[in-house]
Image (cartoon, rainbow, N blue to C red; front, side, top):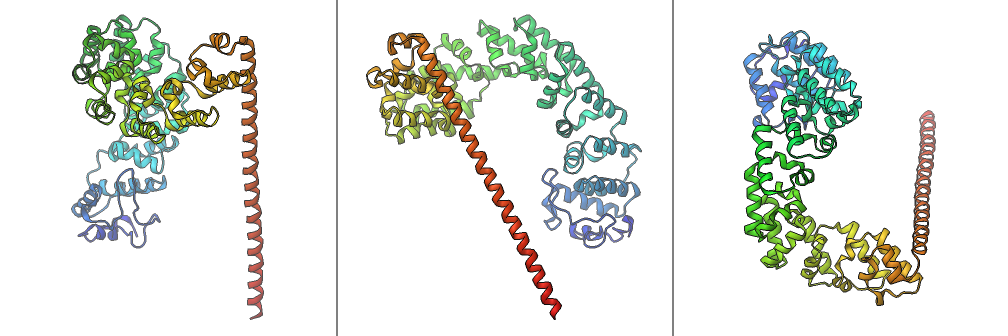
Length: 520
């Protein structure tokens, strides 16, 4: 049965359309009925007529044209050979009319994509983003030039495939890619660095070299006093901002408000792509709503530059509402917290701040305001990795209560393995009770001052103690890893033996059944 015979009778519904296509019976390319394709949004034919845009478009085409042509069948069959089921369905629907716009080189295009590993669902996503006719019309020479240049950068095959699927339009014109690579090489970036940039920021493949050159000149003249190459490696996306419409106005506003613009830009390169109205909205919020004095606005932003790009409605205002309403801080208190730790205003209320507060209240600490006022970063600490292990060590090893941290909340700001454990264990070794010394004196001093004023021992003794403690910790970790490996190997051996036993039992049953049938 040839494809041209599929639609001799005009279908009146999407189900009839699929029956006419032979999906209920034979088909030149054996396949199951159309299945769900999440990437392109093509659904099972049993859905209503208006279920998907594709279903409506395919039905309209089938009703209006009613017959297939050789190109539609050839493209459909080739796409099925490459495992692209959804794109094959689309080819049958879209290539049944005037196909004069499809060049004869479409087979070469599919061959190039197949050689690059773009087959199956990857090809479905590629066509969904670019369009079927547009994909078939890709200039072979342009595509080969792009792929040759990307291969020179030694991008791994898997990463190259994902890159092409995310940005399929780059195969249509090699000039932007070539000029972009030439520009990045001109600012002394290595091919390895350029490859990493393209993989992480695919939009850099469409880099406007002239615009990027103007941004580099602007940064070198007015912002960056040090190595610009290192800055571009960290934030290459700034080269995509339009220099006249975005970068220059943003830079002019920052120069009017900050004495050290470089510190702000290096702290948050995204500020170069923000609008002046966004900057002004953040400033008004910090000064008028939070209560930060006008003279301390610049200091607050320099301490945490990302606050300039924070959204007022979704980040800043909910955090301020939590501090004012849930914790009951006054306007001067919130201003004090914002000046000391501006990152508080961009924290996630439910995932970070509220979770930590409820944990301390669960420990019986009702006056959490005092804890937050003295250590605002505690709202941002990871509950599972930072707070809970340190609280467990405080209660079980140091024999202190959660209320002891109210006098020294900074306890949670010190690392457990490199500061808290060595100091407290060393004091216990030399016979200095922590209850008499206090957490403040035990943790806040430097190593030399700690040994001289608190432990009253030479610094060399404490360093030897720390080295020995690290050796014991490494040995414990090695033994734990060895035990885990042994358990995994034992479990694997048990599974193998069980499989062998079941196989032998199945063979015996099979032999028994054969003997039984032979008797009858």
